[in-house]
Length: 285
Image (cartoon, rainbow, N blue to C red; front, side, top):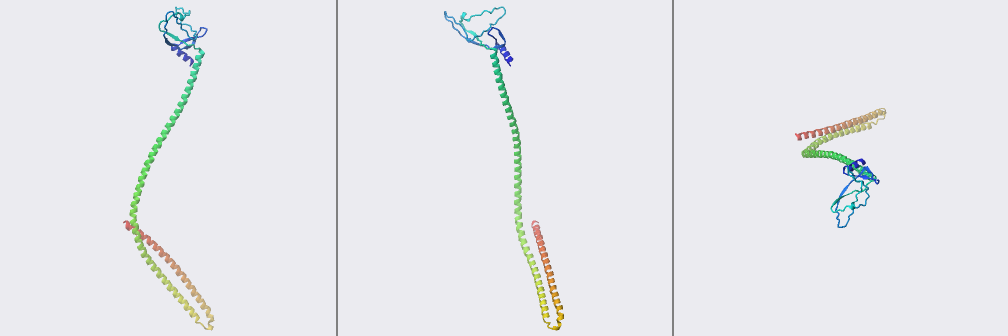
């Protein structure tokens, strides 16, 4: 970096720097600045141009010209505009310090730039990823909206079909209810009549059995012959056998009546279900 800056100063026309002993520095150059000054000299007045800097510069030499003798500027009166070159003194150490300072600042700026560029690159990657995710989410949202719209249409269609079905079923239910009530009442009356007749028959049979038992008891009470004591045990056995037969007959008849009642109930339920199915078919036909 130092040699590049030195080459750059030399290429821009920089002048070499001389040390205090008059030797020329082959590695150090300084920039020259041309300024224009105007000096007016009056009669019997001498203008002397001096500088506050001790340059200790070696004058430029050319072949065939002796430039070793110093020339005093104060001995030459100036009556016109002249160009004076201001050449401040700069040592190699100062230039090296400036170059090192500029190098450090440049490195700091480069590091800061790289750090900012890395952060910006990370932000850019994050933005791109977020943009892709937003695009995917947007597509999913649009798809969900379409599905929701289609679902709403299907729900509306189902509701309309349900309303139509309710409109059709309401009169049918009313008709079936009326018909089933009339049929049920008719069939129920017939069954009640049949059961009542069976109950009357059983009551008559029980009354007849009771009368038979009374007759047997009266017939036994009429026996007052003491010689017939041997036959009383046989008569008692006959009476008890008759009672046992009567009880068995009552048990059998009660079981038969229970079975008949269950059969009648089952037949009635089957008839009712078939009648309802027939009415529904007739209504739809």
